[in-house]
Image (cartoon, rainbow, N blue to C red; front, side, top):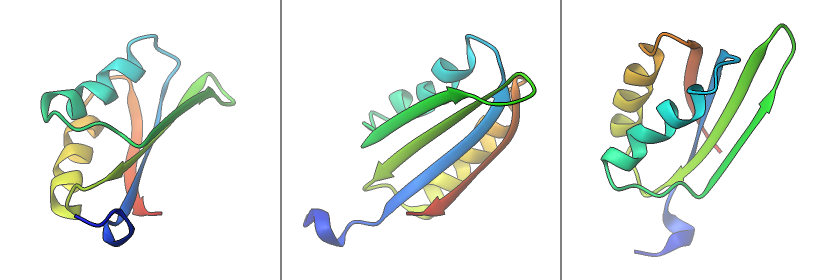
Length: 84
């Protein structure tokens, strides 16, 4: 598979400032044996935690299912993905 032809998809999550937020987001990819291209996380305003995960080689449909599961996590305030 040519890496240049693989779409890079970006997951963005806003969560409560909970120490478990990052591992809960990443465990969804671990369960599928998918290694993110990049992960970043930082504290935001109003006691929120912003997580960004870049993924390649995963279909949009599959990522949509993952995002739906992540959005059900109690500490997650919002989750969505976009093409990068």
